[in-house]
Length: 295
Ligand SMILES: Nc1ncnc2c1ncn2[C@@H]1O[C@H](COP(=O)(O)OP(=O)(O)O)[C@@H](O)[C@H]1O
Ligand SMILES: [Mg+2]
Image (cartoon, rainbow, N blue to C red; front, side, top):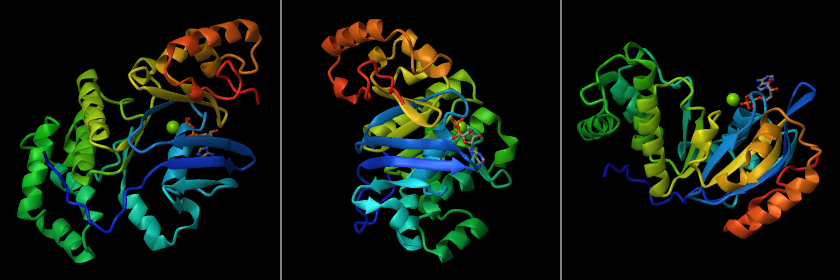
């Protein structure tokens, strides 16, 4: 097990609670009255059409955009009320992985992986890591980590010279070095091959098994169905929050194309009763009994 020792002073991030979160770009809301709770260690897929607000949801969790309204609690902390220093501490515990890899292309793969660690080092040590390469213990950890993601011996390869799939594995290696409490993966499979997709999922699930809360934005519903909890966004609002079993084809078509104010309410109520008998945690279904909120 490759582990990154965590300072004893730091308390885990804890549960996420977003309440009535609204984000506007210009006039139109990217998130609107968005409310959700995520327990530590949950494994959550976020789906929804392009423009539904999925990436904005991730941006508010790192306080990267301003809120027009609402609150975000991370454990006991009010995320948008933290000092710069406190915010830095929280961000250090959040690991991100994006469709576009989010690496420094000019740096060797091993140094990009090391960036998972330098967030937690003194600035002097950070500088040394950049100038002289990672220290011996860190270098060994990075070698082991790259090995774990299928990139043995690539620590010195310039990241830009790796394929897209390999770059995404470097991003995963960075997570493994960082060992965050919360992982935000924004369409991490969009630009990678199926083998890398499986590797990335496997590693994200392992980190989740070890305690990290995992939120993944996906456009591939079949992958989302491998998550015990799925939420769907449409026009900045939650229109579904439930298990894969509850995510019926009819609901899916409404999430992606159909009318959320739907006409098949009767039939859906029956369907819902049916669902309630078969799932363990129907509480998560949103508002309307059909799981589609009626805003
Ligand atoms: N920086 C931005 N400036 C202006 N509009 C934005 C910006 N980021 C997102 N939006 C808009 O907010 C909405 C939600 O975007 P986003 O969260 O990226 O959706 P998704 O990730 O689901 O595709 C879209 O209408 C998008 O055009
Ligand atoms: Mg997006």
